[in-house]
Amino acid sequence: MDNVKRNAILAVVLAIVAFFWIWFFDYLGAKAYWAALISFGVCLAYGSALARSLPWMTLGGVLGVLAGLLTYLLYMLVFPLYYGLSVAIAGAIFILIAAAVSIPKMREMLPMFLVGWGVFQAAMARFEYLFAEKPIEGMPRVLPTLFGVILSLLFGMLLAAVLDAVVLRRRAEAAESVGGSE
Image (cartoon, rainbow, N blue to C red; front, side, top):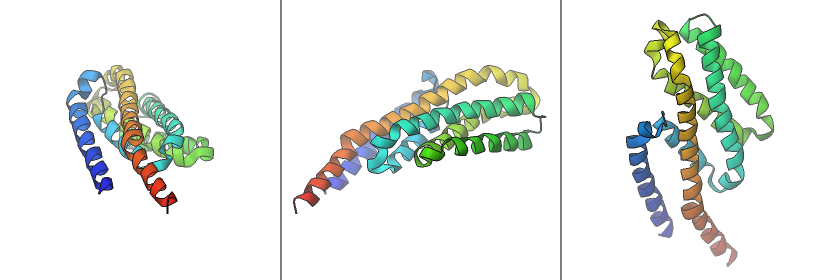
């Protein structure tokens, strides 16, 4: 029963925080409210390994957003303006680089790298009308989107870490103490 109660607390806290984050994300400069929810979900899926993996996941997420920026700059400023093909080529290049760089800590870094990369692309796609018609007008939106996506990713990871420490880790410790006392 204690497990159900903790999960209910987790669900209520997540719903309340998500409500306010989605409502106020644009005023906070976050630019991509969904980034917080996705990074929260990925972090929550790590379970008891989250505390050990969080620094590498954070690095992977931030590097992913930066790679998303470089991908955007590559397909908007260097490649010919065949939007779909240019994005595919630039994306494949940076995802290959990410996979190669994260080989030593792939289970921790690569998922969050891909989340960061994809969320940045999605946040910039909100301005898709600027890509095909006026690429130069999309550039002023790049830096605020970069920092906003990083803020959203880090907020989701922070929320997962706090809930892991306060709600989930206590459950794991209680399960270990029950298992150890038998």
